Length: 240
Image (cartoon, rainbow, N blue to C red; front, side):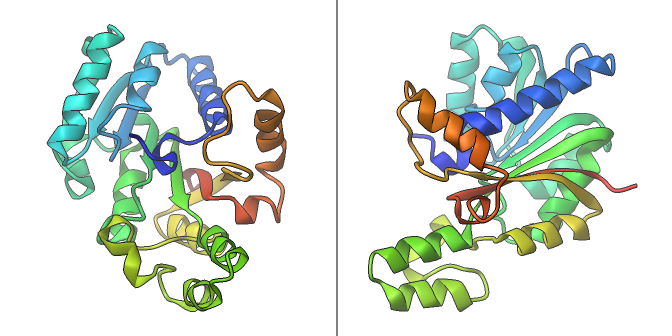
C-alpha cells in the first residue's frame, strides 16, 4: 500500500495541476516530469494520463514492477519510463535543466545525504520549472506523542537532531520542520515559492467527505495549522 507520505492529499494534487497548467501556458505540450523515489507510480501514472512524459527513478525493482503494471492498465506505457537507480545517479539519467516538474515525495526522509539529494533535484529542474517536495513533519510527530501521554518520546523527537526515535528503524532517518526544510532547499539554490501542510486533520480522509477536503485546502497554507500537519509540502524554483 502506498503511504500517505508518498501519495499526498487532494491539496497537493491541485497544486501540481496548477503547475501543469502553467507549463502548458508556456507552450509545453507534454510537460516533462521526473519522479525520484516514486517507483510504484502513484504520481507518475496519473501525470502520464494527464499528458506528461514521466521518468521514475527508483532503486526498488518491486516498485518499478508495480509502476509498469499501473502504466499498462491505464494505457500510458509509452509515456512512463522506469529507471532502477537512486537519487545519487540522477545526473546520469536526467539531462540537467530538462524537467518541468521534479517530484521528491517521501524521499528526503530516507536518503543518506539530503543535501546531496536536493542538489540533484535542483540540477534536474528547468529554469521555469518546479521542485515538489513532500516530507514528514517533526512537529506533528511531537504533538502526536504528547497527546498520547508519551512525553519522553515527544521530548526526544523535539530536541533530537533528526527528529526520529530508535524504534523508527530504517523506515525513516529524519523528520523536518518548516525552518529546516526551507534551509535545506535554500542551500541547493532553490527558492521556496509555496509551503503548505498536508494531512492536517487526517491522513486518510473519506474520499467522499467534501467538507474535510475543503478544510484541508483552506488550512494548508495557514500557520500554525500548516506547521503541525503530518507532512510539509514545498514547491521550490531555481533562485534568480
